[in-house]
Amino acid sequence: MKWRPVATIFCTGVAMSGIAHAEAAGQCAKRADIVKALGDTFHESEAGRGLINSGVVLEVFVSEQGTWTVLASDTKGQSCILSAGEGWDGTTIKAALPGA
Image (cartoon, rainbow, N blue to C red; front, side):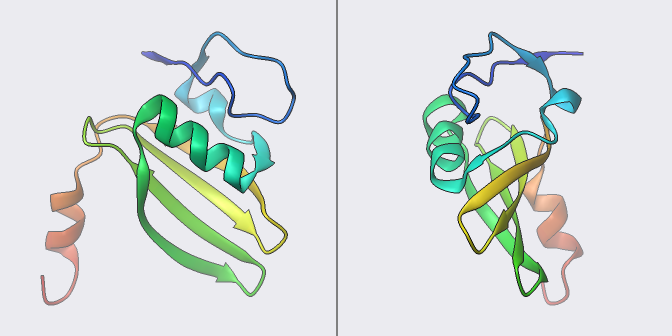
């Protein structure tokens, strides 16, 4: 399993040197801080979003290198990383959508 550094993402204030993709899930912080860290560290930007319910939005961030992160963000500006990984293929997703 490859390791992905996650320094500065989490509100703990403790910089982490690295973490397995599966272990990134469940980490929470202010949405703005996570989004900035995803952009600065992994060059990820928002690729899509959808409502889970009236108070929570599911967001997917991806990079051109194929890394991806899924967040759940609430209406109070708090986000939690649900999952993260590598090998994102956006063309497969688009091809599966109706009318693509």
